[in-house]
Image (cartoon, rainbow, N blue to C red; front, top):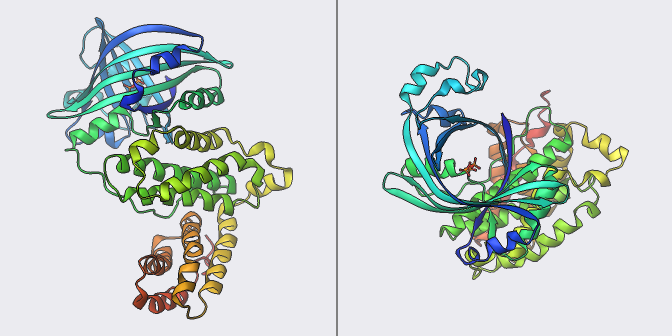
Length: 435
Ligand SMILES: O=P(O)(O)OP(=O)(O)OP(=O)(O)O
């Protein structure tokens, strides 16, 4: 078994021609382009997908390899997944060759193998370089081809950076250096994920409303903080994809994701000093006006250098725990404390800020003036309410969201009723039950 640690980028058509040259500027070992054919297998009831597994047979030259990837994590474009590779003599499944302990409990291999059928395929040409960067060896693969399920197909044009030996920090630094000339954006979907989507009919991807962050029970404050940034990054990644595919409303969701990052920096700002996030905040500040501008074309923005470097800065901040050198013993003790207890205190603060802001009838200008504050505090509720059941948090947060959209859409007739409704909800975090 090996754990694949891989940063994936989508390459813009304009950048394809110069990319090999850019890569070859570092000390490297180059391998000539190779044609790879991959058939992915699945059962009629999606057994593998339901267990977060992906199975393929890859053909190259006259050889075959069978690979299974199991559940892992994706943070921005950084994919970490356990994978098992077995050389096979002919392109026929032989599940017994994988270690026995990778399968879900009770799984019978012979019937499973019988039920597996080809579902989709990827065909691409991969050009490879192994680059020495810092103290690390990093394999760069440039894949061009397509993913196909029956009649439906999508082009593939990806750059994958895989850490062969050394440090994740070098992987991220090499990515930032490659980003300098533009033409790349982070890709959060594996080729298999794209294949499954096509095989299921390629339904239009829908906007996803932000729902309450649910960190693992008994999370520490630091774990809750990491989960908050991960939520923001995945909301960003997902909606960037939609925006590029033509959904104009997704731009707002990308802005919302950035708002979430800002709010997380505020919420944890008492523990993580501002100087730990100076670079990240500067990059966000540069990006925000471009996102606010409705005339911005996603193809230009999302493949731009500043945009990618901002997202890489966040990925890197998260993956390397870049705040840690700035944390003193006292703050570390607080970061090790209960996220639930911390959240209760912060929820109280958010609620009293809103209560104060909306305690009386406001005029139109005053409502508009309070909108940014209300937007920030709704995001705070999203990040801090995960310890409570949706049945308690939902009505509370929705009532503030209702006021938020009434103000944003200038539905003046709704202001008063929404304001009173929001203020009438009892705080769910003071309900007394020990959790
Ligand atoms: O060659 P791999 O294992 O990196 O796999 P891939 O065909 O590039 O697919 P993905 O990395 O998207 O799972």
